[in-house]
Image (cartoon, rainbow, N blue to C red; front, side):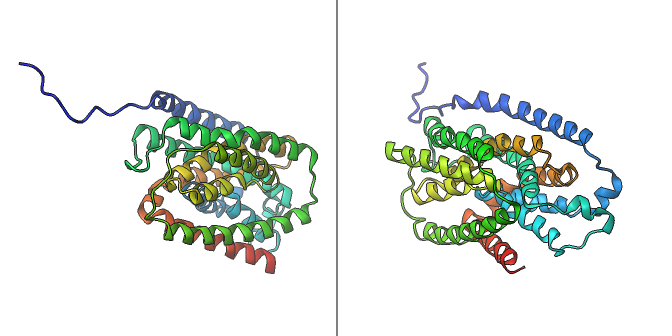
Length: 327
């Protein structure tokens, strides 16, 4: 008997599936090796760990916000470091020198923490989109479109980031002032566009990218790369907001923002490392929390919904920015 004819064609397996399956264990192994090497360079011991334990939950919160909304974890880490410097958080006197960071040191530590936390988020989003095929039928974006959305901003963000780190030097106090206003503007912008997204939720989602949008992404890469070099955040925020405004699926916008951000923070990390700005003890306590937050972020995003997460993230950013401005 002839085989029955089926009306539904078999699902097409993305060419990225085997690439992602190979990349995930390799990336995880590199993260473990990097943590071990940094630990061997540090002076981290049990008394320091017990005295600065609060950096662990800070890492969790920062990574959840970063990987669930596309907003860099620096919007959490830098305000906490500033609160330490201003005496807003009480720590043992013998650890004050370790935990009190200058603005440029805070940025370097933020870069280091995000290298780990956003790496986990990038892996989680890649596994969900390519391996588990978690996008709904009206949100499915081709691998070619995802590549264009990711590599277009990276093409200009990486040179802009490196050039800014090499030739732009901002005095620490001014850097913190700039971060306060940037963070406040970011929080307000994110809040506004969250409401815009809520009002546009019923509209058709965009699943392809036009040449004009690619040019805008190239421009965003320049601005975002330069801003990220100064504050450790920027490129992911700009991308997430722009892609959502252009009606790309929210999950796609967040995933692309996280993928671009993790490449930028890994590249940007080395400037602080080679200039001895990285406080390893602080970073190493926060990194395990960032890893936990990176794993939890997508599940929390699915549980609460992207709108609520962006609302909470924008309120956090605005509140922390006002605290920095008023302190």
